[in-house]
Image (tube, rainbow, N blue to C red; front, side):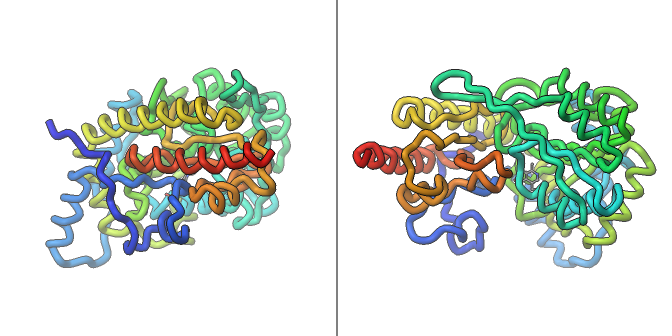
Length: 393
Ligand SMILES: Cc1ncc(COP(=O)(O)O)c(C=O)c1O
């Protein structure tokens, strides 16, 4: 059995990496959600073989990729879908935009639990709707960690407004890293059905489970399935974001056709290499993913232990999924903005908390999807800057 080397430091400079290109000098990028690992060999091989064919004309959705997704949903979740339930999109943000343009009317509201992945707000506003944000409740667990809880009475109050046509859901949750429980999903499913609100389940992080179990909301029951568009992708799982191939599952024919028409209105099709990479990853990337998850969980535990010991004023979530650590920096005596402090004083660039909505102010999100040595370097830099703060107080 191959042992994949996630410790290898791969130089990404000079390759137009969005993550690495956004920082100057020696600053360490730990922001946007891609990983500093090579993708599974099966994905790379599929792309090389296709490139060697040498002809790259217009392309159709590959049936074997649809079959691989059908098989995967059955295997992972005992979820029976059909190949025709599957649509593709060059990226998930684009699919979120298509949803917000294709469903509901102009001026409608879209129910969102925050803090959440910032492009949700952009997709809503760019398509002439308004985000109706419900702030999740911050609950401290102990001196070091916190989690969020959702208020479903408030959720129903927003859902029952006739102007609310869509609920954008992020499960597993970015930035907090929690996985919604079955009970919560049932409540969401029931409220959305009752008030005729379409569920758009962004489950892009669902393969990155460090602890616990992900339940796709559409698997709860047939009625909920008929009211849901589920969005997944090999992009986060197999580090293929640049290949822009995302997967939508809509079991309701009318919803699927509306979605397909909305996508056609704003996008071209997926790039040939995106299809190849997706198929190669899904068909041959299982063992790579199994080893990746062990590595990521160790990275998570390392980061949590390090922060607890050396930077006790920083509180974090304990993510059950993703490679993202949500950090509450509000107790640090920083003069100014937490992200600027990290970037300019520590030389580490996390994602700014504000990207995730108002509720993210004073927080940053640190990406630990990188070789351990890089994570250690990032945390050591942060510690040195935090130690300096203590000297000044
Ligand atoms: C919840 C969520 N949805 C969508 C995306 C982006 O998807 P894509 O790169 O396919 O547009 C991200 C990326 O971080 C994400 O975290």
